[in-house]
Length: 475
Ligand code: UD1
Ligand code: CA
Image (cartoon, rainbow, N blue to C red; front, top):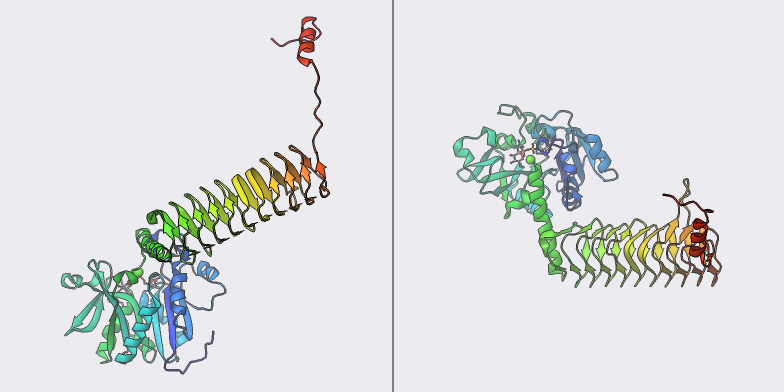
């Protein structure tokens, strides 16, 4: 990001305020790192800001600055630090070394207002430009304006903003509120910020005081009112976080249904922002689809399943209580119930992974099956191989992980332990109950267990010995 003064009068510079403590969240985590449908509040605001293709993007940070920097590592943002949180006006002043001398428009956003759309910001910029204003305030009409700054108008024109705590009863009855989102002309902004005082109930430098300051200077101040007040809702408490999360989730669910996905119970369907689902897929109650997950068409995802950062092909059936993480499942496969597909796994087309089967960094070939009770880790399994119930790959020797390679058309008998590194070549058979410690050639049968011995008439002989006192019985 360039810090050279940008003389383009049409340039947009975005500043996001995120230094506050978020006291009401009662959290160790900075408020803007709390999540809604998988994305942090700050991620949501950054996405909206980036849609404007700003010349610079600055985050004012203070509380939890290190945590925030770590969470935003690699993002093209610059940081201004506000050591003491003396108010929103003081917060914006901290960007002076980065932004003074730039020309164009500064768009100020709040890190805790996550639903704002880029469309609203474009409309704000248009209004601001048309009015030739020093400041344009995004406002909203709210039936319950409690907690917000109120827009005070004189002859219809905005004259000042008054905070809840400083408002008279008459001002408290005003239902037009300040969203905390503004456009400012960069020329003259910093000198005006210098003139903000702290004569208010909180003893803070209030950014909204700029309105009265500019009006006094006879500069134009405009407003842009959003149609839906929900869009500018701020998050100050866990209750608000939950309320806004519900709204976001409903919106995503409606999008999915409009795109041809059946949700048996939208109220208990949890789909993250970036998840894609194909048409004719049916999602049962209490399903969680998270992160970058992509689900194909005509799948069935049964209740209680959770799929994280995974790609699922068409016509896959995920039965109840299956967890899939960072993995790929190809078309027509069956998973679960109660399957656990751990990171780095890939399940081939039409493969079956049954109940209580755990995969980790394991590739199942096309049509391969592991239908019951197995642990398959660091394993490659070829096409149409069958892994019997109770099979365990012993991939860990206490120090290192080792690979198991199972070829095509292999039959692994039940309750086998495959001690890695080991290879079972194409078409080989493993007798049930084997401990396989050496490679098995193609087509061979491996029996890795003690041979069974039958002792005829053993019961009768034992009884005789007991009678003659040769064998003591326990009393
Ligand atoms: C602010 C506005 C209010 C508006 C509301 C909209 C002020 C004085 N009031 O109130 O008119 O209706 O937003 O949501 O601006 N922050 C800092 N440093 C500080 C103080 C705050 O970075 O010293 C940041 C916070 O982290 C937050 C944002 O500024 O992201 C808003 O601060 P907050 O304390 O939540 O202001 P409100 O009381 O909500
Ligand atoms: Ca707030």
